Structures are given as C-alpha cells and as structure tokens.
Length: 105
Image (cartoon, rainbow, N blue to C red; front, side):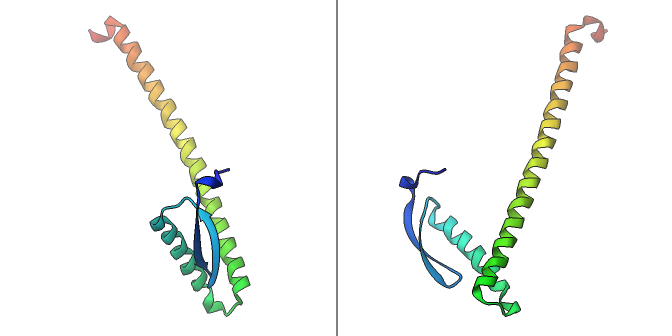
C-alpha cells in the first residue's frame, strides 16, 4: 500500500459531492481522472436515476474496465514471453551457425 505521508490533501467534487481526499497524483492527472468520472456519471443522467444508483452503475462500469485492462495486460505478457522465447531460440540458432565453420562454406 502507498505511504499516505507522501499524499497531499485535496478537496474534489465527485457526483456533485465535495470530498476531502489524499492523493499523490499531479493536478493535471487528478483533473483528468475527475473529468472522466464526471463524464461517465453524467452519461447515466439519461436514465433518470438517483445519484446513488448512477454511482453504482459507474462503479460497475469502472470495475469492468479494470478487469478488461487486467485481462489485456495478462494477454500482452503471455505474448511478450512467447516472443522472448522465440528470440532466444533464434539467437541460439545464430550462435550455433557462427560456431560451425562448415556453415560458412
């Protein structure tokens, strides 16, 4: 867990509610996150739901995005490991070719 002593206190507005939080995000990163949350929160206004239900939908949406990103990261790691193994195999083949003078004739 992050050391809260390195986090600064900030007052933010989320879903029209002011909150006091501690963050280590830069102002620009924090504004980007808050803008995204506000945009998603407001996108649920068309359903005429109370704020708590809109926040619940937002939480589900963000949770799904998190799990999708984690899945993509795992898949990318598998692909990277496979490419790494292929590079090692190719390197071994090149090393074998250099060690064998007959290969140059």
